[in-house]
Image 1 (cartoon, rainbow, N blue to C red):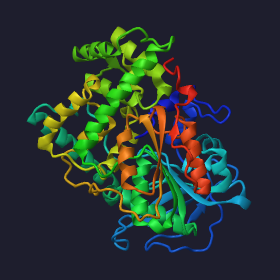
Image 2: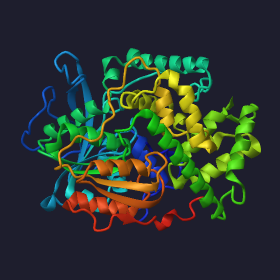
Image 3: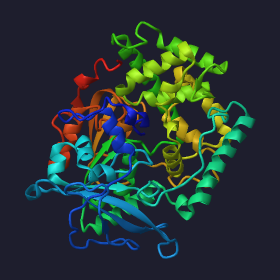
Image 4: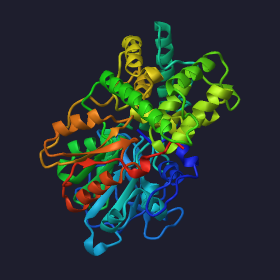
Length: 509
């Protein structure tokens, strides 16, 4: 539920005429944070245990932005006995103060990424947020607890290619559960009590502490991917403090883990077929004229014979499948994905392909796992083998690989249960979200958006055609424009259907 970190290393993504470039975007998602803020207004119902903003200079300094921290309890249920954590914020005041609407908080996805850097740096803010939002809102970026900038979580390396994420035997299940449990134990050992309080409901309570510290009675919120999970948690806990809510790439948190991984496998299978079609239609694609599914089989066979390497080490077929899955998140890396597959099949070199993998940056992936495992329901270890077989049938080209399988398998067997119990949204009719959903989103499938929309009678669903995970900030301008109008004016769009962006054509080069 995130943009591949490899995008950060691509020079293809620049800001031209308001359109973001690849490198700029991943920098937004992954680099350190720099804060912002307008002067706080009078106090507004401060949660017990929260404190006022401690303002500090932004690093580096940036025009108009102010940075600070808010101190929150480690455990909101026991604020006086649990110690504290720091939450970093950045506030970029509305450029048109005479027409200021209010505060816009946003979460760009992850989990494990922050938003303070995006709000604090003018160039990054202008990549992520259209001019109308920067004009009309005080934009507040928050680095959630567990993320560097705020009090971080520290864990051991969660990736061990020798432990299969698709166990076929009871012994392999035991090995996976042992690896997962060792990882969770390392987080507690290296971080302390905070590691047990990274769940999304707790982060939502931190956001409300930020709101109160800024003296704002309500907030508008833009949640992308994982940010939609945070939006649900906030809206359920504080519905009267929600002015407007945009859900882009929504996760349906009413579903059990088995349903999530089946939907994920089907979405990835569709995404791979779409990639193959784009490649076939693009003259510069290095796989043009080839059967992509056959090339994948050749790639796996080479890995299973021990013939594939990257960075001086052997790479498994399972790692390759997970890297392809990550590459399908955005057509902007079609060229890298095609070249990576070709390099493996022709030369046994997985350097380019594995650069697309979420495993490439281990500290960020460790944060991701430490947080998400507190929010996604568990699969019983004894059900893993059968479920792995089922997802392989649902998504045969990548043997069932999907982001949801990565999560569910990586959290299986943990001693602490997930803090989240699957349920549909529990909010009053006054909460009327705008939902954005791509037809071929491989990480948050369209059927999840349809389900959430049905369960929220006051919601509006904008269905956009095309490929890529989430409309924001680079996959569909039409859907983003609808969101901007809704956020500024509380006006649902006249049309809830958006075509694919013309720029999506021919992106396999």
